[in-house]
Image 1 (cartoon, rainbow, N blue to C red):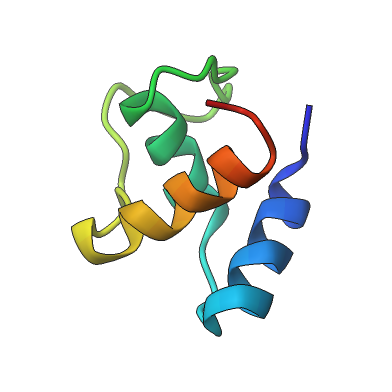
Image 2 (cartoon, rainbow, N blue to C red):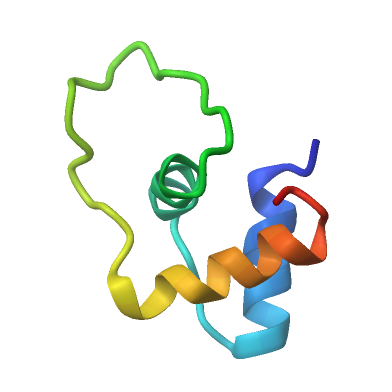
Length: 67
């Protein structure tokens, strides 16, 4: 499994945009990739991934054969 930092580095190198770990976790939920629940998290995400960046993270998932 590819780590969050690897995905962040890929998106930064390819598109020049910094993505947050929470955005990656939200994108995983959107695209049906299993996510471990953080012990300190409530039911809803505080900062979900903005729609304009969701496709960038999806591209990274596809690049790393996660979806």
